[in-house]
Image (cartoon, rainbow, N blue to C red; front, side):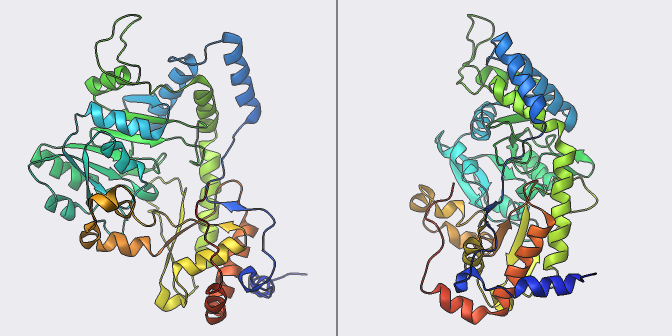
Length: 416
């Protein structure tokens, strides 16, 4: 017997929400970034090959192959693999001789600021464009002082920063420009792959990224001299066996990580297809839910669809973002409040710059609205239908939900 989508939705919505003393919808936890594995047999073959060679690190053949494959995929001259994205940011910042002050968004992962503060460079927090969630070039220009040495933008959700405007500002004021591209592998801007903009771009291959190397990162650049400096700096400054001619640290990617990176990259099209399928399912599901708006991707550009981003309007939904967050957690749907509460509200920045929020109204507003939903190869369309039913039922019973949530706080102190 044919069952219409509407009748299915009504059937699923008839259950009692876990926040209202019902049972959770899911007997497993749905995550925003459950790791993709790719071809397990190919991975094990590579790991066995590595063990047979007994070459586990120090610019091994898998690292070299991974760098070459990434450079080809991104159509960029140089790709320098690193042990993780944070170290990659730190080495790139030092290689670009950033110092004193660098303009950054507060709406980003905390590592974007930490990579500067760790080197005693002051991150100057700048507001964002509410449409793109990326740095607002007009605001960037207003933050430039004689102490400014660079701009560090983040391609949030893989949405490119206003790269031309930022490059123009950097050129005009003789500043270095780099990008945190942790969200943006496989994304493009005006036909050019992200990885080619500014002086350098930094990628993350952490396990939660849709292409992962267990743990890893990379810096891409079209600058030959900068690439050589990056390679020296990630390996203590060694050039040859006994010749150290530059200051450096240990930022090398290991062979097991590179083996996983290669295996994962070989499945990139499959992973993106799964992400896009889920994105379309979410777009259809939430299209008419009051107070819920899906962040949409530009169909004219290449996207990885890695993040499903909802913005919650309390006035229309009847519930706050945090209340819906608690409802979902009770159902074993581990949504995330990216990048709550904003880097400027985290330590040490909150103590250093307690009034920073006064200059970041768009950032603060977005931090209170965004809810990032589970997706990836571990999430199926029927899961998304159930999440849709949860959201609709919660918003349809907003007063009861709000009353129930006043007596319990389901938000964990820390989330892995």
